Amino acid sequence: MNKITLIGNLTHDPEVRSTPNGVTVCSFTIAVNRRFAGSSGERPTDFFRINAWRQLGETCARYLSKGRKVAVVGELQARTYEAKDGTTRMSLDVQADEVEFLSPKQQEDGSVPAPRGADNAQDMAGFTDIQSDDIPF
Image 1 (cartoon, helix red, strand yellow):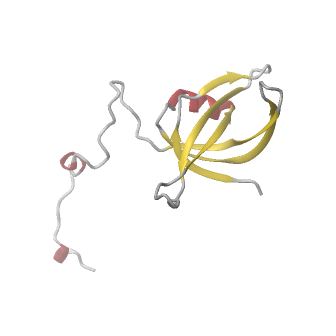
Image 2 (tube, rainbow, N blue to C red; image 1 turned 30 degrees about the vertical axis):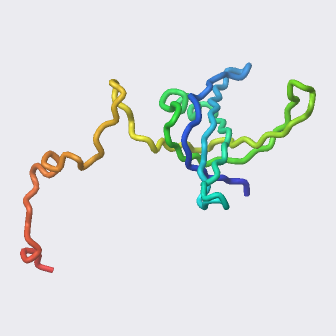
Image 3 (tube, rainbow, N blue to C red; image 1 turned 90 degrees about the horizontal axis):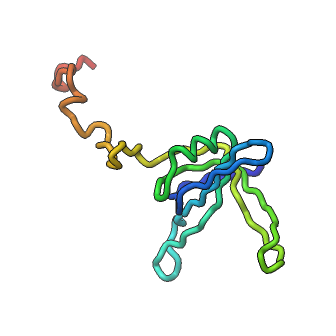
């Protein structure tokens, strides 16, 4: 089984392109911090290139931007290519099956809305506060 799950932040805005057959592909790179610090005390960061195809790619292109946090589930795929200097290189890419947006949605003015429950009075409208002694069980 080939399955990888990553949570990280986009390092730059996504790139969108289409294949000659008109299939959309959205590519972006995410930075993923390792769980444990190295000998220097810093947590190393790994960078993963993600490819999202078709409708998933279109959605990623529309809503993602540099710095946004995402969770990606997909398949690790090795590919080879020829570098500008003529040498053959290998790259590991993630072919995304699922991308979940973890950063809060930005409003049109660029600000982030307050978290749910921040305006407690409005959320509690219509509810009555009861004492634990009033509960029959």
